[in-house]
Image 1 (tube, rainbow, N blue to C red):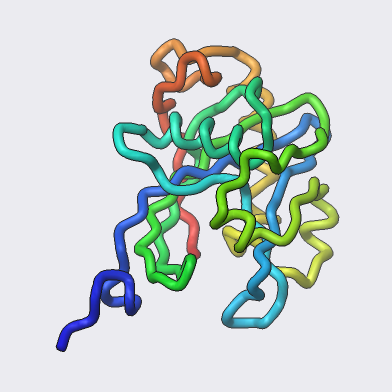
Image 2 (cartoon, rainbow, N blue to C red; image 1 turned 135 degrees about the horizontal axis):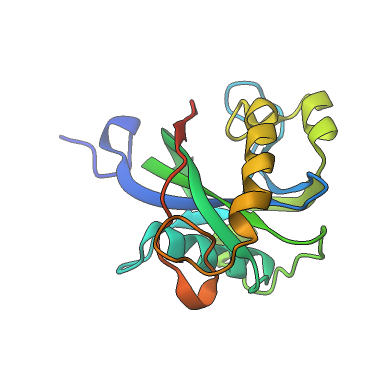
Length: 193
């Protein structure tokens, strides 16, 4: 008897995903903590907002929709895709082959996050969210996604202020907003799970 799709890592269900590395000019980034601890270390783990694509969406559209659902924010400038990440993960009792694109986004300062748009799955899986400084991430014993987040963020901060402030996309990788979501030109680097 063979395993059903999603029962094992080998039968993982494909899940194209978009995430937003949401930054402030002062270098704070918004991260969510999962209720379940990291399987390898048993420590809490934190990750940027985002989730799976819905039918007909591209990654940039999904990034903006997920950001609105998970934070209530609708006026975020979305910059280019900066990281690609592939991994296998359990979510809601099923295994997924996750293919992530990470976009940068910018807000002027840390803002209060609205959870009114959270789905049932997000309510089940997410414990909290908070704004982290670079120093706090570097000093923490918690796990971050991607694992090398503290090392990957400084170059992204330099890009975010340049790429996101230019407004809606012109087709050459400039920032996009909910009104004009087209996939920006990647400044991509692959990062390990």
